[in-house]
Length: 444
Ligand SMILES: Cc1cc2nc3c(=O)[nH]c(=O)nc-3n(C[C@H](O)[C@H](O)[C@H](O)COP(=O)(O)OP(=O)(O)OC[C@H]3O[C@@H](n4cnc5c(N)ncnc54)[C@H](O)[C@@H]3O)c2cc1C
Image 1 (tube, helix red, strand yellow):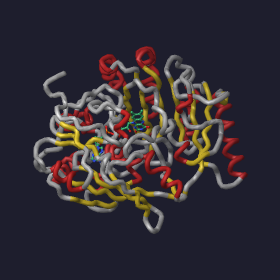
Image 2: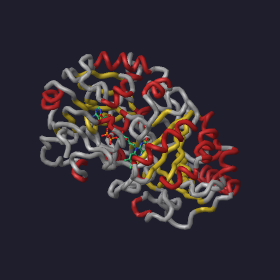
Image 3: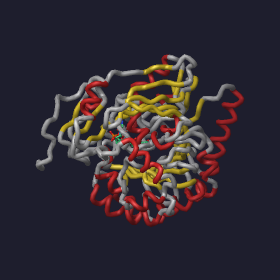
């Protein structure tokens, strides 16, 4: 072990961190260099840790693949803090504490007849961590998870509690904030009446047909994912279509007809049985498919809470491009298929609706995400990424929580409000105690 191996690891936490080693991220590709990982159980304890001096960062559910959460000082996990899930009297929002995961709050909302508009591919991630990095699901009309945030409460490194609500000065910079403002102690999210979703999978759609009218493909359902291993460049592997169950039979018939017509136009066949995003992997961990309707939170994620999501041993990268650049971006990846395929577990293409959050990867533009789940060979992935990054349109924004090699100045240049964000960070953390190496590389 290196000399900076965590020296004061505390007893294993009771929360979601129970299932993981204390010192690594979920994927195991990062050993946190923190001198301690703390688990405060009250606001006062949290304040004591934040104001103790030295470098500090807050840790969520550890699902990032890079060192965004890391610090050489103290890491603070909020998973033992009091848990709050507080539905507003108007039943249009819910206030949740900073340590909770989507999988913790979704069943409670459902019990109350309420729902979120979107979820990521897995429910295991913390709400605060997902929002901090601009995490998203899929949907032409659905924003990133951060776009559901209507208020955020942060405890700064000096122990001061600051709340910002939608419309307040600085709010648009304080949501996707890379953990740079302080500990997010609670978030208020938009909610809506609960709804049901059914999931349909089609196999081997033609790439040429997809690229001729990408909008027709991504618009055919509430949430659409195109999966490819790039073993072949003539067809993608699968299209997953998640559809909110329409209110009337006529609407349902119309939706079914649209799906079937699209499948015919793409030369795709309905999957015979349940599928994993990676063909050949046991789909047991996946949420129900084959058109069986179920509650939103049991269909929007690809993976069930009680199973290890995704492939388990993997690392991930993702680039989001404006919709106008999407076909060029996919063609760029397609042209590199022979270099990408040997390292790839699966590529997923999704859509995200525009928002106004300064560091959101869909800031100011409807976006298409090109996500890569890689085999866990980070050195080889890092060797290939510059080639992919050079081939993608210059508008591509890397996912903050995944592996990328673009340099900080280049990343900054793709966010028109970067300087405003830097000013917001300076205001909240003048002593730069939350500025870690990752943020320094970005130029903070
Ligand atoms: C299997 C898998 C599937 C994934 N699927 C998707 C997907 O579908 N879509 C997508 O966009 N991304 C996806 N991701 C990426 C993931 O959503 C992001 O990495 C997200 O940030 C994870 O949240 P976390 O709490 O686990 O992050 P962590 O790594 O714990 O933290 C992330 C960042 O948030 C900050 N942070 C966490 N909690 C707080 C807090 N309370 N206060 C202040 N800062 C905080 C940390 O300091 C850090 O900067 C996936 C990751 C994995 C491993």
